[in-house]
Amino acid sequence: MTEYCYIHIPFCKSKCKYCSFVSFACTDKMTGYSYSLMKEISENYRGEKLKTLYIGGGTPSLLPLNLLGKIINKFNFGDVYEFTIEVNPDDITQDTVKIYRDFGINRVSVGVQSFEDDILKEIGRRHNSQAAISAVDTLYNNGFSNISIDLIYGLPGQTSEGFLKDLRLAVSLPVSHISLYGLKIEENSYYYTHLPTDVPDDDIQADMYLAACNFLEQSGFEQYEISNFSRNGAFSRHNMNYWYNNTYYGFGVSAHGYVEGFRYYNTSDIDEYIANPVCSEYAHHVTEKERLEEEIFLGLRKTEGINIFDINKKFNIDFECKYKNVIEKYSPEFMCKKSGYLSLTRKGFMLSNIILSEFI
Image (tube, rainbow, N blue to C red; front, side):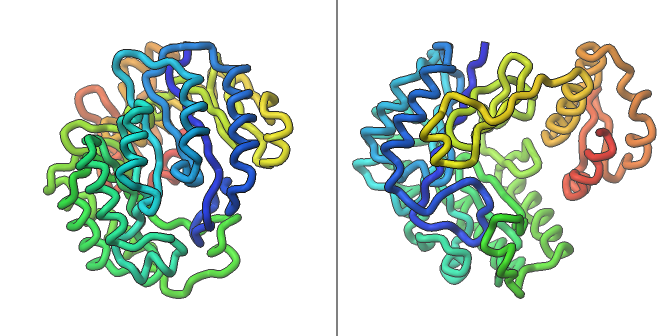
């Protein structure tokens, strides 16, 4: 049984300069795409009562509300569920928010990225800081108590003090969750072929990250994963399902899923997807070795780390013996064992890609 689901809505009014996600700066294909998406859902979703549904993108808040409602009606929900939609601040109005509530949406992730207007303009965002603040206030004043915002550090022209100022403003807003992402210039982004010259270097980005972790902790936000912080236990239940390496549906162009031991992903070609949405591009049966590696790779993203007893029982191994060299190499500065859990320290989080590669 799979009780978690991700839906990809790939449309944007314009593409941000840092973005390498599968998204398209057009809206003329939204209707055709939505009906193909519903066809994929009908062919593959087995009617489980969902514990989480996450609609990401792209910019899902661009989708016409009548189409969004038809897509949502394809699903069943349990008595307690988390239903998240990603939005751009400019798309938030009182009328939209009320319809979101009627649809059963109870968590909204707002793509803020920065509160500095010059930086927002430079990276290609279509809102300003006041629009972001207004969006959060409109959501909160219309009954949304579970609001998340995304912020990026290491942006062109950004300083450590400027980022700290963003954080001070963020915690003053009625948000329960903050996600922090370091700028990574990746293939398929505008910045990949037009490198900005005033990007903070790796050392400055590391200092930004550590300062942010400390500041958010002091401000009542608990870090529960490398990039995620929540107030009053408002973890993203959907993302926690990923990090616990559990199954989930993935619907839409380029979406990934994990069902009945198979990992699969859909084509990234939107025209191909619209023409044939029920054929996954790739499906792979996950081996026992791969499951173990995924358990480690995903589990060590969480601040609590991995439960050594559980992983030994699940995979019939002696974890500390099998990975003795790696554990000793990075302990105690970057990795620590406490109360039966192995976890990365904050310094370890900054080297996570290097450390985790040694387990694989």
